[in-house]
Amino acid sequence: MKKLNLFLFLLAISLPTAAASQTGSKVLKSAGQVSFSKGYIDDRFDINAAGTNLAYVTVESKGTAKLHIRDLAKGTEKSFDLTKTTNEPKEIFFVGGKSMVAVAVDAGTFTDYYFFDFSGKRLGLIKGVTDIVVKNGVIITYKRISGGGAQVHTVQHFNPEKLKKPEKSMTIRGDMRGRAVIKKQSFDIGYFSPDYSIAIGKIIGTYDKKTDSKTPDTIGMYTMETKKLEVGNPISNNSIWDKTAYLFYKHFGFENILDLKGTPTVEGVSGTFRLSTAPHTFSDVKFDYQLGRFEFSTLHQKRRAEADGSIWYSMMVDPQNPITLKNLKSEKRFIHFFSISPKTAQTKDMGRVEAPQGLIAWKKGGAYIAVMRLSKFWTVGSETLELYKVR
Image (cartoon, rainbow, N blue to C red; front, side, top):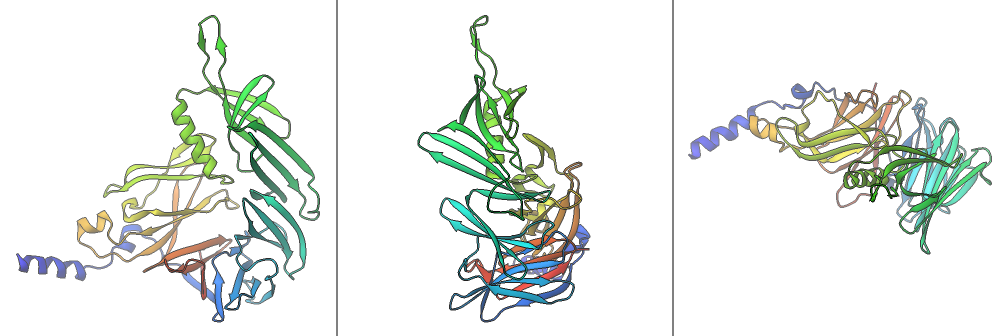
């Protein structure tokens, strides 16, 4: 018996790594790295959509913070002091189509957003909102207030050149459970479209005297700008509808949601892998890789779509996945990057980076992806930020 176990052990370690043969995934080429030894680089960073600039924050051991804007083509950068604003940003992002970067700062229940140009000049401040998205050059803010027996949802549009005052302001109010009355119809607010232009929820059925019963609840879509409530199809199962609504509610601002439930198997998944394609609508993800090789809890996706409409996501290989255990093959731990089309739900393998241990934070923009390796004991940053070419 001991000889048999020894044979199996030697066989396992002698077999080649299976990762490349199993997926055909290419190893991404390094495009350089950023290092900072006087403290750390914060794990909040961003690459603009065109892939021309990288924004990141360095924090010295004494607490001094600087925001850096790097020209990825030239390798040059500008930096300016950020300490008075924050040394612990909640988020950093570029404002699409503008030489402008936003720094989000935790403000308790809400978030404050500071806007800078690439020279460090502060262009404006939007205080106390729940979320911000940028669409077609417009900064859209969303704020949700709950209290005093009511819910208030406010959506505002800002011109990036004039941040002091919103160009549009729209509000919908409901009671403490989120129920609004619109032209005598009871509308339960569930969640919002990714750009906050539409509130999606349930129109509560009414009592029908003829049948002495309640009519079915129906889907409702309330357009914030026109204040019109559109009546949709009847809801056949309220419990399932509510669970799905909560999934969308948790992923506010996401253009499409990847939902992976279950456990990995040799065949793929004992559960479901789906992509939202419209409110309360999903398609099964079409993939040509071995899904069972991955640790499902590591699924991470970009919130906003690329210029071509695709959504990027990543997963990490589980070295002890059921496929390698079955085949007695060794398996290195990699992070794999994928893109998926919301129109077809078809996935493309975009490449991989070796990740032997720890966690990974990443951002993608244009032809670049920035990767930071984080320790499970220290997740706020690292001394190194790596860059890779993805095409």
